[in-house]
Image (cartoon, rainbow, N blue to C red):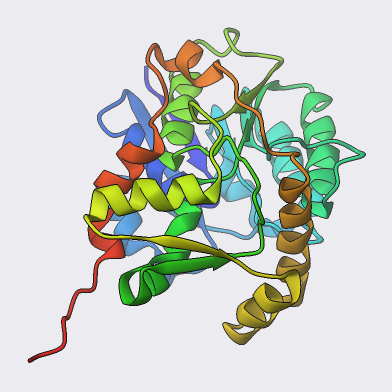
Length: 296
């Protein structure tokens, strides 16, 4: 008998990749969305769509009814622990058997960033919730580089406030495949495990630029900028101030060497090494290329 998996954060990058990784598996997918208007693409993926909001505990019981496995992804924000609490409580009340929670690398009560400290609170709650649980703590997403695609395609440069940081960045597709592996295995197999997920090697952003340049067949340059310059850019794009503050805290931590780490966990879960940045750059080359060249 197939198990029902409830996917939270269903329209986000990681959960979308997870649903793709679960395509064809013997599971029934149920996707939680806040608005019915976001449902069409999810239904095309074969998911049952339910409307509910982690910010509103009263909206959740129908979504959790009959669910065996919960993929728990809460959006970054000051109320993230409350959203995690609402989901875990709904899961307990509905008799859910297992929670697989997406946390962040370095989550701890003394993490040098508010996101890591907030996730530590939710991780601890998940560990004590009385259900089977597994926590995934992925490193910096390679897909974050897609935020720089416009500048890269137009000018051959990208600017980040990460100085000479070296980071064990990971492809979101590997995070999703690890999550799928956990969800498809027996609930007891990964119970009580916290997995830190990284790519195969730590890279500087000069090395990232070289890899992107190789994939695109042209020179790409990384231009380090100050925190203030990046803040001005992000605020100009309408990014909420809380998120800008959080990203600045991460940048300072990474610039200090905090992100220079890798693990062999992905290979242990999947039986093959994680994707290298070269794989990511090759597979996403079109995103970094100008779609419409100026007429001559």
